[in-house]
Image (tube, rainbow, N blue to C red; front, side):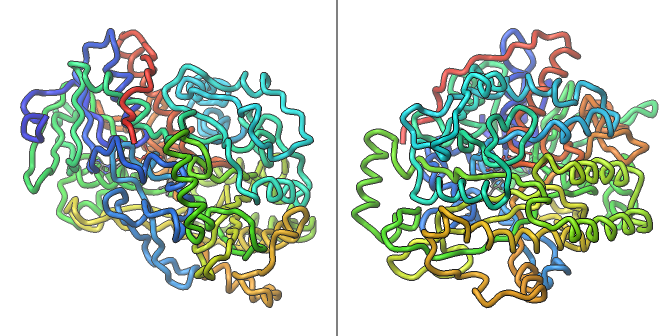
Length: 632
Ligand SMILES: Cc1cc2nc3c(=O)[nH]c(=O)nc-3n(C[C@H](O)[C@H](O)[C@H](O)COP(=O)(O)OP(=O)(O)OC[C@H]3O[C@@H](n4cnc5c(N)ncnc54)[C@H](O)[C@@H]3O)c2cc1C
C-alpha cells in the first residue's frame, strides 16, 4: 500500500517499527486463524535483496575498513551519536541503530547467544514480574524463534580435543522456528588459536552447552549466528516477513514511514490510543487503530515516540510544549548498554584474516567466486570466538575485594541509587561474587583497520573486551517536539569507578590473552595501545580514549512494578494506558551477560503468545518456508 492508502482503513493492531521484534509480532498476530487486521510501519526502506546486508562478512562487528560499511551509512543506520561522555574525555560516540526493514538485526554482527539463568530469573523473581519471565519459562520462546542447525561435522573445530555432545546442546534449541541459526563452516587462521588462548588465559574450560543457562566461557561448538545454511544473513524481516506472510490479506507492511506520535483519547479517566500519526515523503498521515498499538521501535526510539506522544516526564514534556497525556517519568530512564574496550595487533605474514580480502585481490576474487557458486568460504564468516569470562579471571582476589568495597560504599551512600537500582545491584553483586557467569566478554575480530590504519599487505587482529553488567545507568530523552530531531542518548559510560576499573582490567587482560599460546606465535606487533603502555595511569588514559558501545541499549521502558520504577507490566502494557504495549529491547529491565538479539526475539515471541491468549485467538506458530529472502 502507498502511505496514503495505508491510512485509509483502520487496523486492529499497529506495530510501530519493523526491526527485530516488530516482524515477529506482525507475523504471529496475523497468522491463521487470526482475522486481526495488522499494520506494520517501518521508518527505513525494505531491502530484501541487498548484498551488504545479506553477505555475512559485510556485517562485521566493528565496521572495519575492508568489509563493513553498514554502520554510519544512512541507507541502513540512523547515524545517531551519544551525548558527550564526561568519563570518555567528552567524546560523542557513534551509536548505530538499524534503519531498514529488519532493523538492527539487519546490520548487526549476527551473534546468537543466550544469557545465563540468573540474568532472566532476575526479571521474573527479583523484579516481581512473575515466574513466567524466569529462564525456564522463557526457554520455549527462545526455541520457538529459532531453526537451529548443529555444527557441520566436517567444519574445523575451535577446540579439536573437546568432545561435543551435540544432542545435549540440541535439547536447548528449536528447529522449527523462523530464524536460521548455524555455526561457521569457515574459520580464519586465528579463530582456533584465539579461542584456545582465551580459555587458558582466563582459566575457564570451554563451555559445552552455553545456551543451557550457564553462559560463561568460549562455546566448545564455536559461537552460533543468524546465518542460513545457504550462507545468507537471516534478519528478522527475512525470517518473519516472507513473501507468503506478506501476502496475507490481513497484514499490511509500510516502509519508509516514520511514526511521529500516537494519538490518545481519555474518557472516564481511561486513556486509549485511537490512531497513529506517521510522516512519509514529507506528508503527514493518520491511521486509526481499533485494538492495540505495539511499540517495537527499539530502546532509543520507543521512548522517543512515547514522549512525543505526551507519555513521559511531565516537566520535560511541558518544557517542550507537548500536551501531557500521562506523567510517567521513568520513560527513557534506566538506559543500560555494554561498553567495550579494544586493542589491535599486527599478525605474522601469510596469516589469513578478513584483511586478506582487502589486500590480496586473487584471494578476494577466489572467495567471491566460491561464495557465488556454493555460498561457502570467508564471505560466510562471522566472528567466532566469543567468551564471557568471570571477573575473577582477570583480577586478583585483593583487587576484586577493593573494587567491591568501593562499590558497596557507593551503593549504600549515593542518592542516585533508587529502590529499583538497589534491586538490580543486588542481582549483579550476587553474579559477580559467585564468579560462575561471564562478566567481561572476550571477542576476536580477525581484522584491523578499526583503531589504526593497517599497513599495506598486512593482517591484523582486533581483540575486544565487553563489559557485560555495568552498574552505570543512562537515559534517552527528546530534546524537541519534532520527530526529525534525534533524542539525547546519554549512556553515561564509565562514570562509576567500578565500571571504569572493570574495563581497565579488560584492556589489560586482552594483552595477557594475546600473549598466551597458541595465539602468541601469530602476533608480531602490538599496535594499539603501544607496547610501552604499562602503568595504571597509561591504561586508564587509554581506556578513556577508546571505549565505545557494543550497540546493546536496553531498559528504557523497563518491565517492573510501577511503584518500583517500571514502565510496562508483565503483559508488556504501559502503565496508565489501556492499549499500548512495548515489545522490544526497551522492556528488558537489567543487562544480560551476552549479546541481546535472541532475547529480543524471545520477548517478542512471548508477547505474541500473551496477546493471542488474551484475545482468545489460537497461538499458531506459523510456518517457515525460507522463501522471501531473495536471490543475491
Ligand atoms: C551494529 C550492531 C551490532 C550488533 N550486534 C549484535 C549481535 O551480534 N548479536 C546480538 O545479539 N545483538 C547485536 N546487536 C543488538 C541487537 O541487534 C539489538 O539489540 C536488537 O536487534 C534490537 O531489537 P529491537 O527490536 O529492540 O530494535 P531494532 O531492531 O533496532 O528495531 C527498531 C526498528 O524501529 C524502527 N523505527 C525507529 N523509530 C521509528 C519510527 N519513528 N517510526 C517507524 N519505525 C521506527 C527502526 O528503523 C528499526 O527498524 C547489535 C546491534 C547493532 C546496532
